[in-house]
Image 1: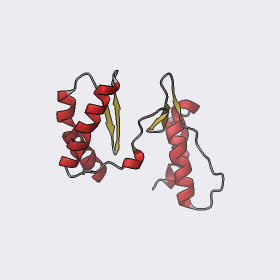
Image 2: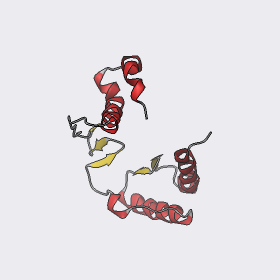
Image 3: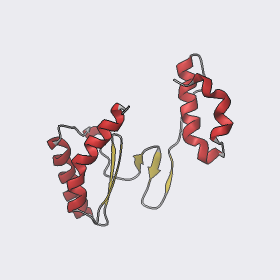
Image 4: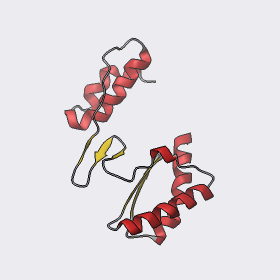
Length: 132
């Protein structure tokens, strides 16, 4: 069974492939609905941004303008990227767990933080009963 996220990711990947082929010197990271572009020259970046916009729109997809980030720090997949460092974004952890959904959100955060906290998947096994 293929998930909807997988289909959407593949669709966006196919839309971006011509841009990747035309610009091998540009870093283009794409995951789900996030796209990260990096070049050594701002002029190249502006050109590639235009190409990405056209490719995405040509595939019938949209880029949310309010999420476009052109100045540091950039936020990408839970990371805060500056011109010199990459670090995890600050997390707001609400300690008020009142519902199963609140607990599932907490576990999602813990799952994301596992590598930083030294927690293994086996350590989390006892709480797998609340999976959604």
